Image (tube, rainbow, N blue to C red; front, side, top):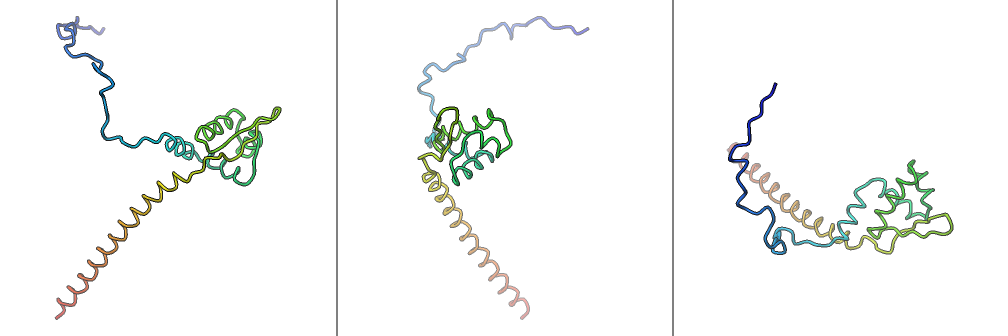
Length: 151
């Protein structure tokens, strides 16, 4: 048998601080300054291998959701969800004619996302070039030190 203690004064005391902010519009995260929701949608859409495969397939030819579902061995409902994510990101457009919904690549390409990635690629390439210079300098010094020790 487990006995529980009666609530003591610590649990009965009212809290002295409010649990909500007095002025919520004044709360600001100074660390987050980047706000481009379409980037989040694009990278979120591209984070899934099936969706990347759908984009590759649509790059070759337009296709119905049924054809895409068959190609990727999934249900129509599952493929509709994937296409919906791609459509929200602007990477795919759909058009319903009769009972068939056809998918094609969207008008919104990935130029901005590619430019963003390219800036970071250049940054890292420059850092690795500097690291290569440091390594070469250390090798040169090590080689010179080895010659001096032999003498």
